[in-house]
Amino acid sequence: MNYTNHLTKLATVAISCIVISPVLLAKNNDVDISGYVMIDHNQFDDTFLENDDDPDKTGIRRARLSFKTNIDENWKTKLQLGFADDSAEIKDAYLRYKGRQWADLTIGQQKEPFGLEKLTSSRNNMMMERSITSEALAPGRSIGANLSGDLSSITWQLGYFQPDETQSSSAVTGRLTWVPWQQNNNLVHLGFAFSERDLNGSEYRINEPLEVNFSDSLIEGTKLFAEDVSLKGVEFLWQQHGFTTTAEWQENKVTDINSEQYQYQGGYLQLSYQFSGENREYKKGEIDDIITPGWEITDRYSQFDLLEENNKVQTYTVGVNYTVNKNLKFMANYVKTKQVDNDSTINGITENGDAVLLRAQYTF
Image (cartoon, rainbow, N blue to C red):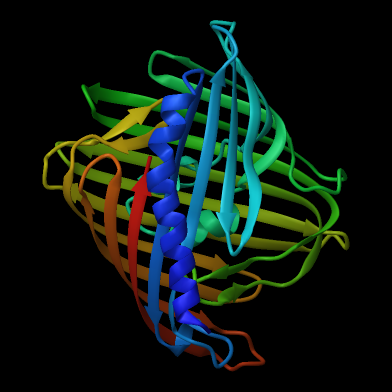
């Protein structure tokens, strides 16, 4: 690998974003232009690799550019582009109608309403990577229509989506959250979500890395041709005076075209403390920005079970974050993993791994 050229590309993208962002904002009064760039360095042992590869990698984890426009007082749009690995893709592309008090209607490509961690923007997450369970089970972005509303301490969302581009699959996904206690930004949040997915024989497989992005995908389930998937999840959030606790449990049941069933389940418990004593912002059932700059320490335990494959994965992560201001943030994580494969053909293999992750994040 030519590291000089690779680092030059990283520096060019980062500097371009820093230089062009104020110019764009100044020239587009009717369009809200924003974005962020994450530059990561991952160092890990051979446990995270399938082949003889480089366990020391640096690259652009994410780069996003978003355009938001208010057409009038009732209609607004969002377009978000993602850049990685010398390619670009559309992340969000939707039209939202807010002309009714009881609900907003969002049409287009958007996040399906499932999972507190998955719905939280990656730039606001406490850890550099989302938990194994959130990445493996929680649906991401799909094309569809979604109704959302809030009433006092309750929020709700219900949508119909097309999970892939084959136009043969469909999903109904919904989420309900409740805040039983709140004083200013100190609160307790409870949530439940579901997704009933008709995949109509589409290929389905669990295939995820061990919470280390630049490593190989080692959590591998059976390759299925799935008829339907039933997915459920529960979530908890408590934050008070800088302390934040989040936890989720998700499980799904996959039925293949031969009527055989496969089950996957997992969850995480995550803790953090901001030395400023302030909490993250909380809006309509989702975690938002950090309010004040400063140091934050984090801790997470996560587990994921592939029940039919008799495979279990556990990870333990500790981290430290430093927010300089609303634009600049640095993160460091240490990840320890344990993977137990009790498949009879392998006679029970337990593998342990260690990784160190570093990130510089610029937001404009």
